[in-house]
Image (cartoon, rainbow, N blue to C red; front, top):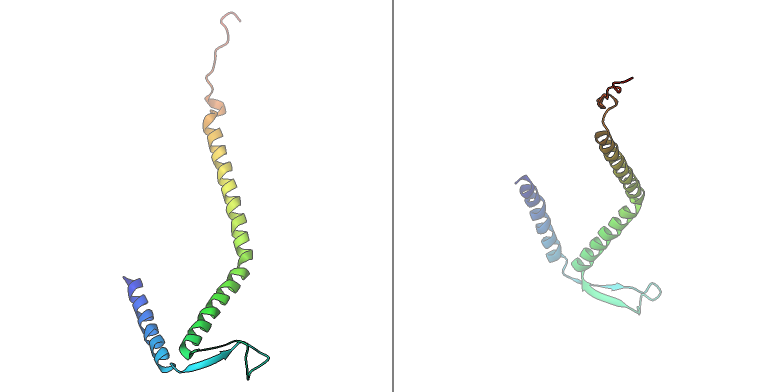
Length: 118
């Protein structure tokens, strides 16, 4: 229930802001992808400004996520190594427990009396 309330408190105002941004920035802009010729670019796109803003924000989030993922590679490797160590220790512990229950304790052997004639 709390999660739904927090989601509503965050998502609804964010959606209102995005719609307001889109309505306020409907004018068309030309984006040139040719850094050498600004007067006659080889490729240019004309699109509404809000689409350009949304595309750039999404690209920034993706690039930031990739950069964060790459920086955390060391921690993922460490976690995998430690997980393998924990698994090996659990297996060793289980083997020791099985061995302990399989062999009786030293004092638990039955005492066999010596032969009667000796």
